[in-house]
Image 1 (cartoon, rainbow, N blue to C red):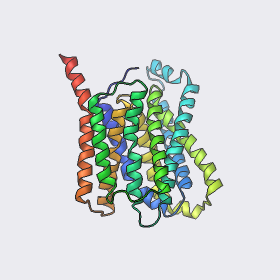
Image 2: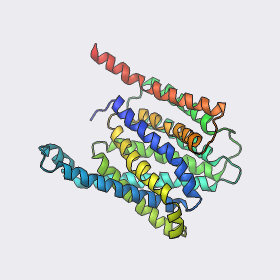
Image 3: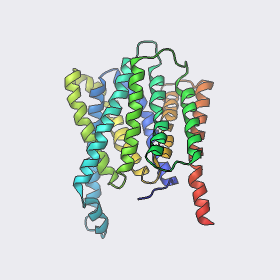
Image 4: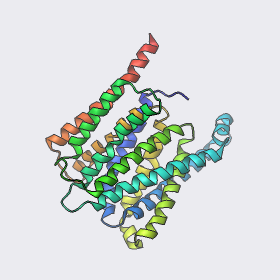
Length: 312
């Protein structure tokens, strides 16, 4: 199915970026109580449960309605949906845990969230390059938007610049490749039902994180209870809602455009920190926000040009 970028897809991805960005506050709070695998296991299972309930409600609402053709198309090959969900879940498990583990390994005094945020955001250019290598058409304007986005992310996240290379940086780069892979995999399986696919991917990611939790961490019920609110927020809004919006949004937006829109996650993270944690924006960070937002707007230009040509 040939897809074109649209306002509908961009809006869904924008909402996903908002939930991901505001979840950084929840992640910071949870990190003080539990380990990375424990956090990702619990949030993934919460997200999977939330989506499983949503799938059940959708199917119940469709009973008796005359939309059998759509139902049959969704249920025609459930094995393929499970296969797609498991593959997406494997990649997401790697991406989330490389990111969270990398943050915890930075030494004291290092702006871990900023460095990790910038390194993770490089998935924007990775997706653009991969799209080109895979034979997908990437408009030159998207290339310009990608460069502006990367520069903006640098100003936004790297307030002190680079000073040495840490092992956390290495994990951050690996994480960026994993998230870029996830975007491309989601694009490949875009014909699958978004909610069901997202539910399966979190069930997969949660199961793998659970195994790793018992192998490498010492989880305690009391600690998990203390991190209950951050886990619920990350599980429902970041895992359940945002990743489903990503899968639905990528049905309409090309991977290169989608990655740029989703990079607004870091802008929302800064805004969330300003509002919730009373963190003040520096001029450098404000400039970064403006550049990332400009990149998102520029990325919409090819789609607008295409629509104008269609109406002529």
